[in-house]
Image (cartoon, rainbow, N blue to C red; front, top):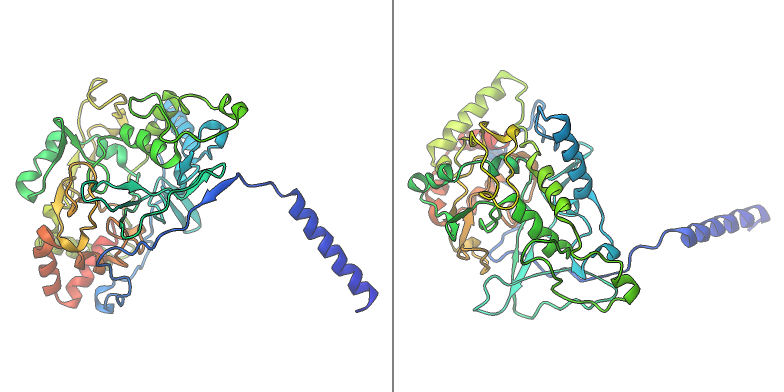
Length: 428
């Protein structure tokens, strides 16, 4: 090797070492290995749906990017931006993070990475890092939330052998304020037509989550901060740490108690409440318009709309404080609006294939809330409550129990009509 080449290599090595030495040190965390989370009776190895049942994605059909509701006042827009900053914030050890947790920020789970080059906020989680539960006790069907990280070398409990593992995909937060603004009466009326069961606890309707186990956006924010980030708040039941880590006294004295204020909780709730619903695809041609309309007729004709109820009118008058919990998310921008979420927000028996042995709230292990279909175009290959379906064709095939009749009707369709149905779904 000549001297010139030798000096060049030496410079490269020195530069590499200097970069390594000055790089900021990552926060000290323990990471747990992800368990094998293949859903019971899952079939990830299935071949893709036949070409005749897969629609094209012509025109400008594309997922919408998370945006605030239209026509917000300057004050409301300021609240939206403040809440957005907190939603994206990476919490640190000295702010109360942990001691066991799944992410340092809300956006780590509630996002949709790089749609047309843009990372959307509040959308569909791409992974299951904060939605794994396990149990091996017949009397504890709720199980234990799996945590994959911890601060300060705190040990992470292993998942016992032979545990049942439940995987739950983070639900979209887009349009969640609109869903919160639907009256209880409108949802309860669906029981007569869809055959679903309302998730009622102490006379109060629960409408969020894979098994309708979350009552309101306020409850969702408080519960997620506590369970997923390990952050306490001034809300009853969430004021103390589940595990007390052995932290240095000087660090303990700097951690606020509770970890976040009610103002922080409220701003996060406001941000989520003011997120606009997903935007339907805009057909580019008259043929696409006709195909989508035909697909919707088939959707209704085979009974899908009985549970995936298309349209609601949000409540016309804001509820007084206290009737929707500590935080009434009933901004004027949410009131008296027609929305198309495609859900009855009720629990349904979906059969043994989707029964993973875990129950949340008042649901039984084979019961799931009808997920809203708006925004389904941006869920890619993570459909159903646990992401087991690779595409819409597969998702329909997994419908059992009360939905088995609609599945049979779908399978009886010819290829052209399946194509029209899925074209409609991919427009939502």
